[in-house]
Amino acid sequence: MSAASSPSLRVVIATRESRLALWQAEHVKALLQTRLGWQVELLGMTTLGDQILDRSLSKVGGKGLFVKELETALLDGRADIAVHSLKDVPMDLPDGFALACVLEREDPRDALVSNHFSSLDELPPGAVVGTSSLRRLVLLKALRPDLKIEPLRGNLDTRLRKLDEGQYQAIVLAAAGLKRLGLASRIRCAFDPAQMLPAAGQGALGIEVRADRQDLLEALATLAHQPTWLAVTAERTVSRAMGGSCSMPLAAFIREPQGDEMCLEAAWGEPGADGQGVAGQPLVRAEHRASVHTFADAEALGERVAASLRAGGAVWAAPAPQP
Image 1 (tube, rainbow, N blue to C red):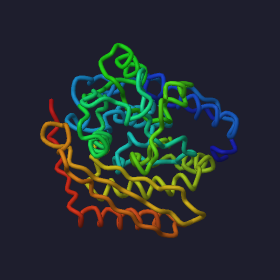
Image 2 (image 1 turned 90 degrees about the horizontal axis):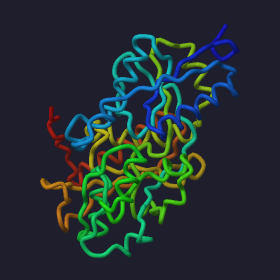
Image 3 (image 1 turned 180 degrees about the vertical axis):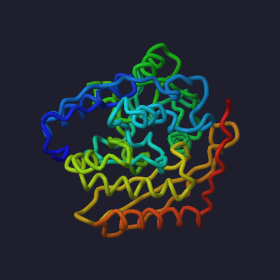
């Protein structure tokens, strides 16, 4: 009997213990129960990425630090599947693991959160804006070179608390996370992608399993949202081709697909030695369109965009991980 047809199948979901990660795991749990009739439990875990809060992710190993402990739980049999925010998942999974499906995307945009200002233009000169994303840093600096960008780590609630304590005049977060936790009212404005191009995979959830669990791969494939999966495959291919890190100064996003035609846009910036962006440094931009029916089509589109970025001068030298 296949996993999809077994109503008594019991599965354990490995998840980080932040409120947003638990929401995501509960969302998948409900899907598995209602769509597949499975019995589902959660295994909450604290990852290294959750523990290291005094250094930027790009300097300590990247966003893959949020994934490794969950993969260990899959490997030793404590869990069957892991639920991830796809923008936190490395472009190439370790040997022995597979992405079983990608769910329909939530709002992929970045959001400005502030207690006193309703848009980026309203921020005073030299305003302190919080983000630890190199992508957001270079995009913000391209829009407002005068801003002072300060590191902002921690889960979503911690970041909002730091804003409310007055450490920042504004912070930039993913709109998807705020909406999923019922905090859409904190969004002062959602950036148009033409202004702040999202990260590859932003707003999408992915389900990871061991590659040898063919039963789970077959069953979970029925939950996939194929248009989202194809779109994020193209976006993530740009990241892979540029060096494979989730922590690059790179934006890649499929804007408003029309049927099977996708327009993939990407932007690359120079974060600068001081982490404040290079004043006056223009972004390297690339855009290509193609009909996308298969994962191979999506990857080909991503490779074309990455090649254009490299031709425009985009080069990534990853920081050496710090102990």
